[in-house]
Length: 198
Ligand SMILES: [Zn+2]
Image 1 (cartoon, protein in one colour):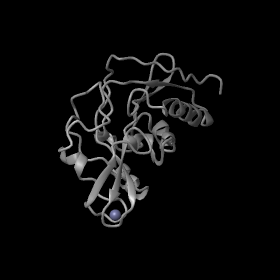
Image 2 (cartoon, protein in one colour):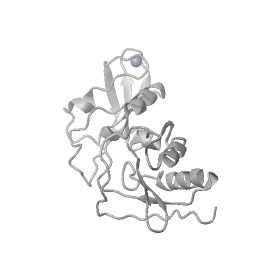
Image 3 (cartoon, rainbow, N blue to C red):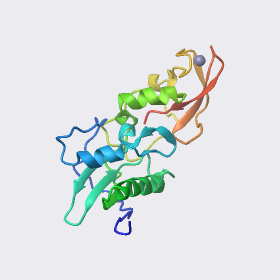
Image 4 (cartoon, protein in one colour):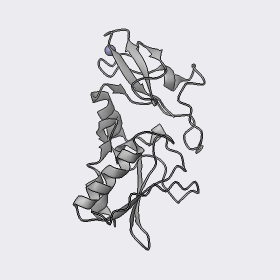
């Protein structure tokens, strides 16, 4: 639909955006229909988890001109951002809704924003979900993908998503994507990705 505007507006000033995991909306929510439609839009890199469960979908609101959907990417420069914008806009367009999709990078995304359902789905997808992030709530603007403190508990204890063993070892600080590390289980011997907390 040509009226859909997918302009990528990066605005550093903070909107009154929520922090933390967002629960599925109830029918009483003003934008319930939009939120429900967007339940079908998944993370391009982790297709079993939708954008709300990932903590990337932050807000739906109306401006004077249009319906606006606000996304916060997992990190600034994430290569999946354009794909996510297109997927949100096209999903709403198929339902006859024109929307502007906008990226906001403040407050910065945190892996603490993943919902409990996202953690379960990651494990089934053989990705160990992130441990709690000590920096959460500090609204960091600079992300650390590599561990700056290898003694950090959250980084050391990645339970194997296959067998549940915590007898695991990090074999590379980077896995299939920049936000994951590569681990190996010392009990079942299988490698797995660990979604790093940040
Ligand atoms: Zn294992």
